[in-house]
Image 1: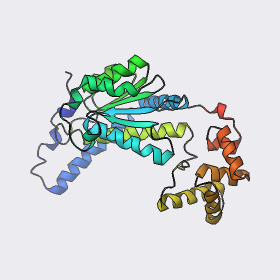
Image 2 (image 1 turned 60 degrees about the vertical axis):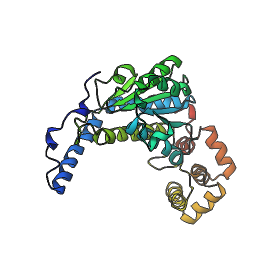
Image 3 (image 1 turned 120 degrees about the vertical axis):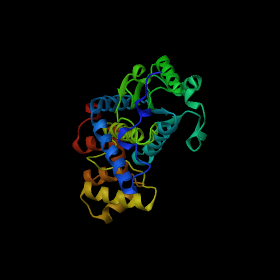
Amino acid sequence: MSEVITEYRNENTKDIDIISTIDMVKKMSDEDKIIALAVEEESQNIALAIDLIAKQFLKGGKLFYFGAGTSGRLGILDASECSPTFSVEENMVQGIMAGGDDAFKHAVEGAEDDFGAGIKDAKVLTEVDVAVVISASGNPKYLLGVLEQAEAVGARTVAITCNSKGIIAEEAGIVICPEVGPEVIAGSSRLKAGTAQKMVLNMLSTGAMIKIGKTYENFMIDLKASNEKLKDRAIKIVSQIAEVSHADALTTLMKSSWEVKVAIAALKLNLDVAKARVELKHHNGVLRKVLTGIKSSEFRP
């Protein structure tokens, strides 16, 4: 077993149990400042992973996150937010954790050590999918099972870890390793390591969705307007991009079944809703291509 830096004792926080609360908070904040810089150092690898995921999405592939404990929960969280944010099918991005769904709320002892369970859970993978394995230590046997199965079917693999000496860093195709150093509380990888992993996951899912046209500029044009807050956001987005009043945006959104991209295309190109949908379909749903007239075949991740 390789050494795990997240298990080291942090020399900066040895007195954390006897200092004042404000000093405790300041020490934790000082440690957290390390995280963003560590993630930034992995920018190149993160970009490679984003382009890979986007490429596989365009082939009809799916993105799967696999993890145990905190890492598994973070994967499930990121996956669950993709559908409402980008209006993709719920199975396009999926989170799977060692121990199954029950492990999300309750610790399942030994789940991360089950190599066979990793193989079994990864049976969902196909050759066009991407498997992202997430672990602070980089050593769970469960994830090694996932990677073995991924290789067997030809799925592409990405590892997110905070330990460059972890075994998954040796086995995955792309490795993202923000080394954040020892935790404030030795071994509590839900802290700095967990935050770093969350930051990377944000970048992977958001970046890949941007690359396949799920945004226009920095607007969330594929959101599902499922409540009053999101409907209000949709109105504002349509109004700003199409340069129309809120009233006109609302009217067109209602005609468009609250599909933001359809409403924008209809208003900007002076089309009825049905024709706007056809234009979007011809351009693989990429609004920028519809508005600029660039053919969808010219779009590249």
